[in-house]
Each structure stands twice: as C-alpha cells, then as structure tokens.
Image (cartoon, rainbow over all chains, first blue to last red; front, side, top):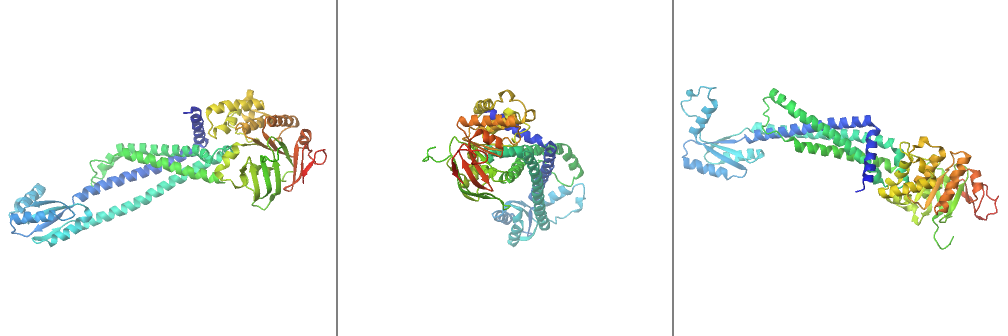
Length: 293
Length: 243
C-alpha cells in the first residue's frame, strides 16, 4: 500500500468536494430529499403490499352444499375440492358449527337467541393458493355435484388487484422521476467542479495522466455526495419511522398496518446503494463529456 | 547524426487546417534528431505553436505523417496519448501552474497523476527542483515567485517524467531580457544532459545569441532551416538545408 498515493488521491477528492461547497451542499440536500421520498415510497409500497397480502389471504371461496348430504358424501366432496389445482386448503364446516361460529361472531351485537332454526347450509371454506386463482377455483367448484352455490368477494378481489396495479405503476413513475432529478442535480454539481478544475485537468492531460485517472477523483466526489445524501435520507426515514409512523397509525386506524413492519435496514442499504450509483454515473457522464473535447 | 537511425521527430508532408478554414501548416517536412536543440521562428500565427501541438498530439494533422520517438502520432488511438505525453514535456509562455499548489506540489502533481509511486516522487521532484535551481523555494506558491521562477517551476514539471523531448512554446514571452537569458541557459543545460529541446519563439536576440539550428516558418510553410542559424536566415555561415 502506497500511503503517499492514497493521501494524494484523498486530497484531490477533498479539494473537489470543498471547491463548490455551497453547490455541493445543495446537491447533497437534493439527493437526500429525492432519496427520502424514494425511501418513503418504497416503505409505503411495501407496507401496502403487506396489507394487501394480509387482506388477500383472508379471501376464501365458500361453497354451499346441498342439504341432506350425509357426512360421508360431504367429506368425499371436501377431498375432491382439496385435490383441485390452485386450492391450498379446504375446511369443512357443518351447518351446526357454522351457526355456532356465527353466534360467536355476533355475540353482543345482535341477539342471536332469535335464531331458533339453523338457516345455514353445510359449507366448504376453500383457500386458493393465489388470489388470481380464486375466480377459477370458484367456477370449478360450482360445477361439482352437491354444490348449490359458491360465494367469494369477486368484486373486492378484482378491485384490490386493479388498485395495486395502478399504485405500482404510479410508484414506478415517481421513482424514475425522482432518480432522474437527483441524477441531474448531482451531474450539474460535478460539472461545476469539473469546470472549476479545468486547469488541473488540462495539466493532467498535458503531463500524461490517463482519462480514467483524471476521472477517478470526480467519480469519488459523486459517490461521496450520493452516499451522504442517501445517508441523510436514511436518517430522516429512521426518525420518521420512530416518531411519525405511530402517530399516523393512530390517525388512520382503518388502514390495517401490518404488525410486522418491513425492516428498514435492507431498505437503508438499498438507498445508500442508489445514492452511490446515482453519484457515480452522474459524475462519470459529466467528466466524460469534458474529457472528450 | 547517423542517417540510418530514425529521427526522434519526423514530419512528412504535414498539413493542418483548422475547422474555421485557417491553414496553419502546409506540406511541412521536418526531421529532428535525438539530442538536438532547435528554434522554430517566425511571426505569430505562422504555425509554430500548431507544429508543437502536433508533437504532443494536442492536434491531429489534416494530412501527412508525424512520428515522435517511433510512434505514429498522426494515427494513434486516444488511449495511447498519455504514454506519448510522458515522453514529451511541454512549457508555455503563461507557465500554466496551479495557483493553489506550492512549487513542490506543482512539480509532484505531474508525477502523481500518472500514478507514480511515492518513492519515485520523493526522488524525482528534488532532482528537478535542483536542476532548475528552485530547491530553496519548493514550499512557495506561484504568486510568491518571480516570472522567471514560475517558468523554472514549469520546466521542472515538464522534466519530472524524464521526457526525451522538451517542447517550449514562447517560453520567455512574458519575461524580461535578463530572466530570458537565465531561462535559455537552463534550457541549454537540459539539452546537454541529453534531452532534445524544441523552442518556438519570436525573440530575435535569444536566437541570434544561442546560434542553434533555426527553422523558419512563414504562413505555415518551412522557408528556411539552418544549423547555427540566426533569426533572419542567411545572415550566418550555416548551410541552408531546405527551403
């Protein structure tokens, strides 16, 4: 390890960073805002995905069976449904048990003592492997002999899936815009540094420094700016998660926040990576444009 | 010079036309042997600087061949330029020093940016500063130096990579006569140590005093080439080599 070389290189990077300190701070700030928004977005997206996963898992197909089938026929039917492709799990709920569950569910809200007869049919509660399988499973099950009717939240499922799709598209567009914006600003800042150091660069070229060597301190500058911005963003997000999220969760109780929040640590590393990458590519392009002339 | 040995610098039918249509060089043939000291003279705008720029590949000729130390400079890849430049030191009228760096740092910079080992930097920089007589002022900044000292710093920087060739574009253009003499003596000393020196100048006194090979350019053409020549050719006893 040649410490003299390391020292010289770090000196060059430091000179770059301090050359346009005000502009550099602006760039770091912009990267921070963009990446904080990106991070918040990813966080919300992941939370939404977790929420919808939870909601989707609760969607099941109820198959109502014809009255008067004996238990043997019922369990044979259950076994047949369970063997269908796309079916994850089948629970057989006899009418008596169904009524008991209903009474338990409504206890305290409705006077269930009024229910003197059992209006419920024997039911198969079917869980699909994937939400997308639900309509297909329902259709197949409905055709089976002994099944009177099937029921599932068809509308709800489809709406939810459409909503998710739209949200993801918008999210993707927002991410692209934000990354482009921070890219542009870092790139402009590096271009300023390159411009203010054009004498150094021309002398480097004169004495035979390779373009890659000339580029290196600027790339490092970009990476430092990107990572500093991202670090600032991560800090912001951590504070927001700790201070803001419980308040928000209190305010919008109807959104079932998943009990297990997505872990912020992998997200933090991803954001730092994005910051570094944005800085590196932006400065590569800025310096490259200058060196080609 | 042994004729069978390839010249260190060789231009054959070199023309250079700038994008704005100005014809800077027109069918120039020139050979410079290893170890020579040569003046390029002529009015400003006659192509002296353009010729030098071809030699360190700042310019590419519009036509013709340029060989420097065996390298076909006229058709080299951009990626090969750094290697050439480490073999060709360049000094300018305006010194082109970095104002934020000390004398030592300015000289060391030329080595450091080529990725030289610190060991070599520590050896080469004092050697060059000694050579140009600035060892005592190595910690000063360019603005604390006289013009002559700044040019010495620039020369030390040009030499720190141990180039075979030193190109000087009006090296004394900003200097007073006595400093000019000092700088020319320094260039002479560098030449006797084996470095080939090419000086573009329109300083008549310098050329006439030094009595070196003189190549005269007019409107982009070589109009005179004389050993031990004068600024205005034909005044000396030297033999006219080409016209």
